Image 1 (tube, rainbow, N blue to C red):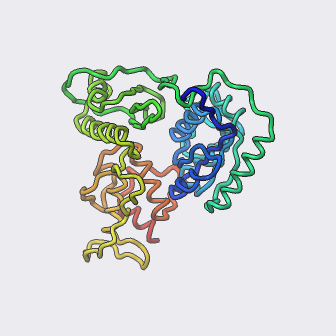
Image 2: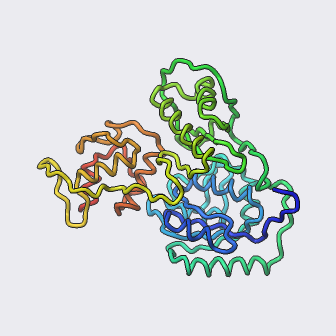
Image 3: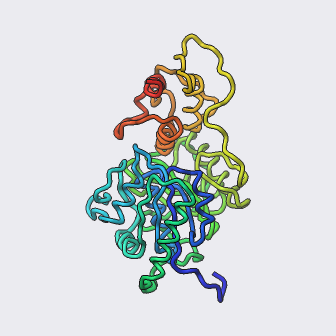
Length: 365
């Protein structure tokens, strides 16, 4: 932070859950320091907590927008601030969301945030004017209250990148080596724009932290992953190389970056999930009800959600037997099916065991 510049106090963060369309108008509200979505009750909440920890001036959080009935990230977030985390299981107490465990955020950091941040439950509200009034009242209430003592241990908003406890640090760089095995778990890539770093975190399937790496060049980071043996399969090496290159481009050019989503210039609308062209008639495809997508359109939506554009799926074969994708992509597909297409998926449903025909049948039932 430049010398002499003062950080505004009593700032507000707004979490719009799965309502992406609210992020832009909410970001423009007076007193709102940041706004964003929250899709999952584990990694998503962990990233939100890390962001709040880096922004000590934020003392209020408004949770609004549409709640995913499958992942219940909003309910889990509210439960976290109300009841905390079970120190043994690292599970959010009282959370009903899917796998609400926080494995890479220190418990003492969680408790500091619970003491510092006041949370307002506005789930279901999607009117920016109403939310603006909620933010205004929350900010006024915080200003009237006694400000908390400065937390000397809190990270500066403009400070350097700091490793997250729980991960084993990796060093970027190395030589290209042979690849033979499949990556265990999954990888999450994000940008730390303040530190101008690409951040890569590797988790086990149960969300246990495995490795973390921060860098500025995609090639160097990929070589570091290969050297450390984190990735040993050509398909994963290709996938991560592409994603890291995309992240590097976004970092250099100031573009928005979301893993597995194509880069777009700011303000450019996203590609439609379902194509608008007339479908070709195919007697083998299930006929669509009025207002519902055809099977051909549904299959296109599924492969788009999985990041496998151009792949042909067999409607009668389980997804897990046809494609191999990151666990995060399956989560994104579930969100797409629920939020974009209106499917009501059971919380314990394993999409890998479902065929496209079964999912389409549930949609058109």
